[in-house]
Image (cartoon, rainbow, N blue to C red; front, side):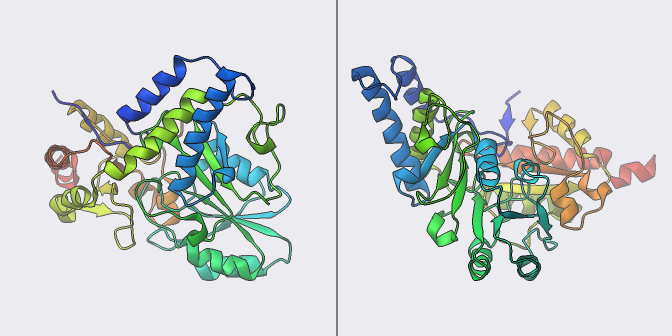
Length: 365
């Protein structure tokens, strides 16, 4: 049986170029902080990757701080500015929602986009310096947030903006200045790079405080010997993004063919082209995931960042879904090696599962 991987928002298979870059780095010995020949070669590899990652979001290389992933980048951004009020949207990634206990939640509309009027009210409620954390694209629904519009409101109040662009990178145009963001989080394993490496884009003039202290690496904002193979793979993965064909036509063909039996969350808003959050009435997401897995198709129930736990999605709840509805939604996410045939087999499996386990079957029993 052919395996079909449709969980790219959890992690996407490594691009061959990224694996090659990592292997090359692993075959060499050198600490990028050393001044001898081997150290300089290691530094050159990191500098090359830094250039590539910076270009991904229209930043300068000096703006890139390498981290262990998107979660650390988010925590560095939010905890490193702990002196500011923190406002986050209700649909942010768990690493944003859990970073600070004092976070104030801004609601979203039924499509999952931040309520800009509510944001303005929150900012106007206190004169204290603030920080807004707003993702570029949602990891569960693919819904694109109005970051630039929110940033324009934030500028009226002197508020800084952090944008979690982990799911957006490589799937939509990203320029951190056009977004109006002061800080941007990225992760390698969402774009064909290795797990365990990410970056925070941060203006060189920022008053961000480090969380990890020690050797002064990464402009003093993230101490510790750099993950040379991971960073090299990150940079190489960026270089492959231009080769990825648009995926929206495959995603749209899935949604069109499963028809009215499904509820597509966020379908009325702009979305990145690889993601679909699909509700199957009467069938628990956990049951669907297992049934698809038996058919050789890998999907997820919501975000795959909770140690394998399947629980109601806070994202769908914030969009107005009931617990029952949220518990019936799965996420299908395409990637660089997805094919039209994958969509065909998914649709066939979805229809079989719905016919076997859906509402008609339940009422007949």
